[in-house]
Length: 136
Image (tube, rainbow, N blue to C red):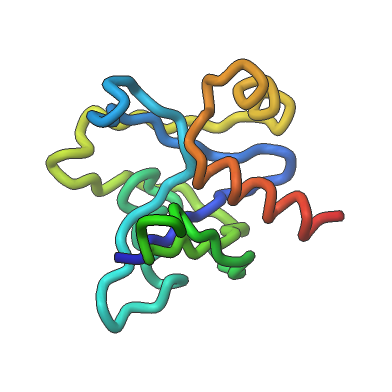
């Protein structure tokens, strides 16, 4: 199943979520993401995940590109969407996301997290690369 990943960007800050990931038996900082349901657009799925996981509502959603999650074994694709014009509200997390945390980070802090392996989620790293290429 395809997923939508959203990069919430406000000036020089990005918003990340942290949650427990069973396969690696650790908590993981990453950009909000979730499944794209059959018949749903990736942009709509990104908006929904953003609101559910962070409480943020975007004034603008712009597709940045697609990342093949694991093309040697999976056909799943990750649709990356940039969210700006953000308005804060309460999150509406699923039962399995109740231990999730979310926070704003400066880009400098994000770069340190990547360098130090604190943010190691491959789809988030690839998504951020798409953003950097767009900005270049």
